[in-house]
Image (tube, rainbow, N blue to C red; front, top):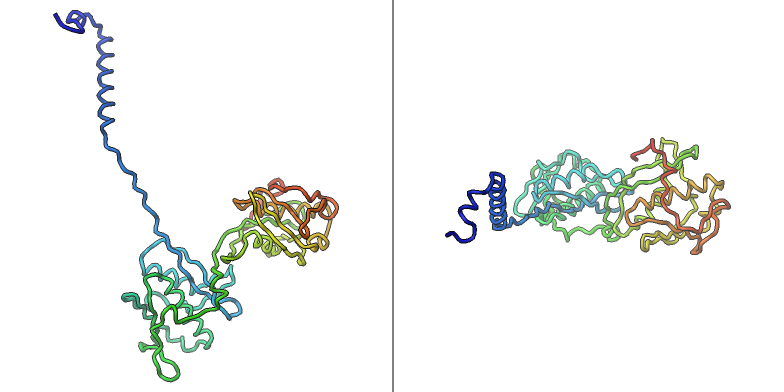
Length: 333
């Protein structure tokens, strides 16, 4: 006598019943082995990212301004090449001028244990004294912004650079060079803004993508207003913000941008219902393009006003309106 399932019962199983029982047994075995499979630990590979500083000269050539250079490598040679490239070309969109000759490349540098010897091109002697000073200072401050670089030396015609008394210059360390302290704190970072300008016919707003340099202590919202007063040339676009306009204050709270203009924003406006709408929504659409702004509240001399120049209700919260934006025209400035 068999316990549990009798032999006669097994004989009487149909072929379908036998297959069903075999399939159940296989599934159970798979589940058992799967539960014993060791967990595979996920490994996240972090991207190498360094922010270096390239010191470029302003348009007046009276100060150096720090410009952020983002690199995705820890290789010292590549980092130096990135910095030299910016120093030799400048950043025209931010009106920052190059400080070194284009033929000064990584091939003219000797790198050894934190020290860099810069072999200056022969025509460096033809530089104006102020340009040579800015070139030298820019190289010292920019290259020593790289963590692995400690000091800089300059050679001309294969010999160490000397002053008028025959004394050898260098090596130079970061602390040996002082730039304008105000500009030192104004590190420029390049960002792209979507700005909306009225077309000359006044029928639509045109979206303009513009690259601008933002200083570390500068309000992006206020910079947008300044940029909206400068329409791109050659595209039949205009600004309806009066030149006498002053932003008295601007801040963002819980997704609402509060912008306080002086009285001239209203009194010096050209007027007209269409111009009012285009003026307001050029500002609203540009500000609400920022991820932290959903609505805009306008103030005049710190107070809400019922109307702008007599046509548009002005004391409400304005939201983005893309119905006024041309679907066909987009400009990269």
